[in-house]
Image 1 (cartoon, rainbow, N blue to C red):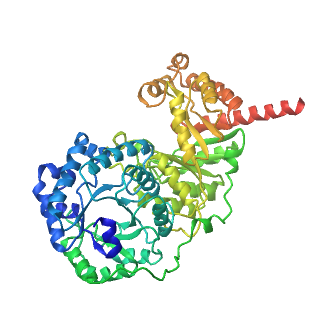
Image 2: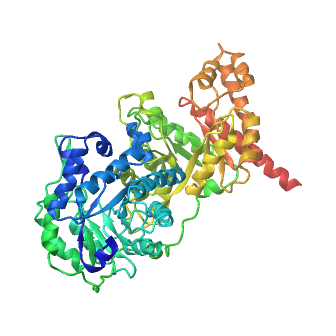
Image 3: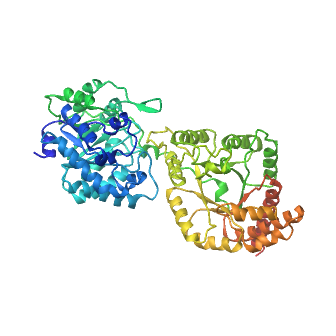
Length: 614
């Protein structure tokens, strides 16, 4: 009897966590490496689950792929570790249990940019290794990203006729992180050829049961459920699961009533938890009919009935002027608001506020943006760095911005902490700037990164940063295209100090249908010019600009004047080719930005008059 034949007749019991047990023994490295270095430990865990009543055990190969093994310097051991995993599981299973080859999700709790092809290659390599050793089926588990799971499922289905088990993971009961309903996700996997569809990890039995109540019994597949033991506690630097195993006995029967044919455990579960599941379903037949509860989650389709937001007028207008004004490094704010009022008088369209630039703490840009709107009456573009906030803090921050009425943001990676005031501070980087753009756009659909409904849509316009100051601009444009694909509404560039580079950027981006604001930073001295050229990543000055600034190194007035002349020459070129100018204020010398803003308005007014006279 094969695995599918057994599932058609009775409820099967899978195993529980392997990593949790190894972790509890004090092992905190690649668990898959232990297939070679400590095979007796892995064998002992498998045997404990078989003795507890598991009739489906999984190989210790969850992270035994090229991408994950690379983190431990084990990338070249994919074949050896997967081969050993199957052999150990076979030895433990004997004729008492089926052995399924486990392949875990790569993306984890958040999608990772540009890994699709690498994931495919890594998945195929691991899949071939497991199939070669003769497993009874393939288990694809802990996939938060339904698109990744669908992608690898299609590959697996092409390569084998063996049973394939697909388990998604949810942050919230009944909904995946991209907002798709759990039942819809399982139906999609069934359509793609999965033989068993279900859920594992992240949630305990209570919430997984709640999610299963809205899932009909599949027509061509079986249901599975592998809950965590509980929510973990954090004690003395370790994650601990304290749910009593007997708690699982009750859920064995409850899962059976929801049509589950394959049940086991995930993080925190032990052989004792599995023995409790066995006791809960002992002697009971699987069900074929159930009453499906209506899911009470707002669907994407319902949210899409809300009218879409319009792009902010500032970024739609040609010849708009955006000025960057750093928030104060201390609690003295008088100069900041003096500068803001002067810029408003100069008819600047918007002030953009950096997010702790150069990794040095400043007054929160969200707070200053709120005061600018109320006290000065000028809108802001708030920068959001990936460096300082984890996913929890990032979502909270974005919801706060929305609640305060701040609608325009710039998604950036952020300067590394080692360049700032606290070089030992931790850089978070839960997401890249690409993923941050996509995350914000998902909030605009009313869906949190966990997939949970926000009950309302946010209404953010998202800017993306663009650094054209590299030799091969086409490479930078490729990254820019990806940001636009992820949802960027408009672009703000690093400062450019060369008219020819501005024209080059225009040619390279003329196919892009988004507003682009070219960064212009007035140079204040020869020393400033040399610092920018030699010490600031991503910025290079031409020999002509450097020599012009060097001609008046000891006269601040001449240096200032020449710096403004250079900036105005660059602005003239920008106004010929782009939507507007992004002025970057140096060293709080806001009078320079004021003069340049006035110059832009004069130039654009003259241009408008010329058109009228023609």
